[in-house]
Length: 247
Image (cartoon, rainbow, N blue to C red; front, side):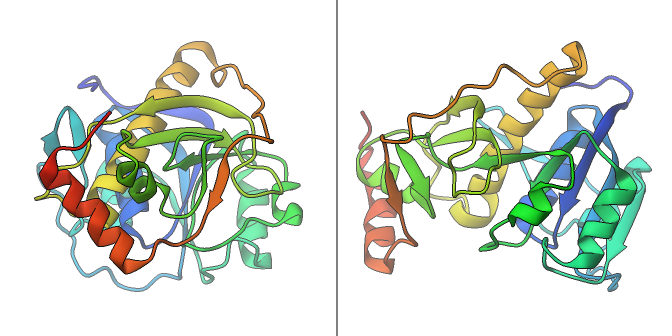
């Protein structure tokens, strides 16, 4: 993790929402000494609950986000320009306008959960860089982190360029991560943190070479689409952490 002065990543913009994942993304970028040219923040210009910007904790070498620190607060502290969009929808016209004005080469996608980026949005120009919490193509879809742990596998993150289908875009990087501690909020802290960690690693290469890592097309006949995990299965997955199951 860098302690050098901030480096602005030319051509890189973060599309953020008022979520734990977006907080992790911008906090991790700042911690690694890399700043996007700007942040497009969906959800309007509402007052932040907290203006706190404090020390961050690490676990297994991974930065854990401070959920009390808003995206806007982090941007203000690091002097990152921020554009507020009075929409939560990535596919809304106001969002399209903000993306078009920013005109990035790479748009780090961290919108609100459950949204599918439309073909019209993808056609705006930038590469939409997305961190999927699962090893592709084996784990496509939702909450795949829990399904992987149920099967005794290590959690993973895949960095992909979004296309018009769900989790089928070309892969630019993948990494396995240690299974979470039972003391860590898996959904809001751990999942956000490991996605942010791989994002930072991808952007280190971009900063060095001016390009994303080489892309690899997925074997689309492989893998199974997963859907939002049932609460009982989710509970069993969490119990497996206490039992230390892992391949």
